[in-house]
Image 1: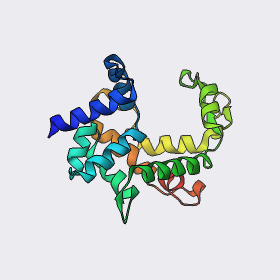
Image 2: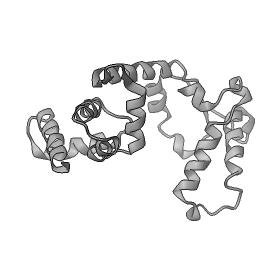
Image 3: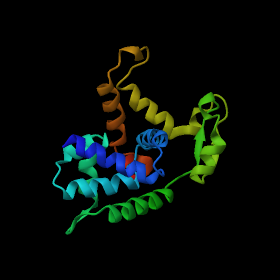
Length: 191
């Protein structure tokens, strides 16, 4: 069964890349670099789902987390079941809706902001820099840093952190209601 799935994935890759094998590997790597599901993966989910594969089987075939597949099927199924085309339309609609919620970015003057022009252009938003030693100009950011410090106090050794503790520290502040957002959670505001 796993060999069948791998050959189906290979056929999809071959047909998309004019049959050149060297391109297949590059394209496959490129698709796996994305965090969101691609259109191609959504059609593969539809095919494998109609063939009776379990969510875990689909996840293995696409080299994705089972929770990603579960969320995709739950979010984009209707009375007729999961359909790749419908899933793509809904995904595009969610992305367009998220674009309306992008606010100006205020960052500090660190090296990590070297590509601010590309980010500003890609998100179609304004990008501002705070003055040195003016943390009040980035209030929500400083507040979030304070919430994260509840999990990792100053002096914590980051080499000793586990992936689970980092995910927990990332998840809880994003589910905490914020006064500055009308007591909505950051996840609720964005999604």
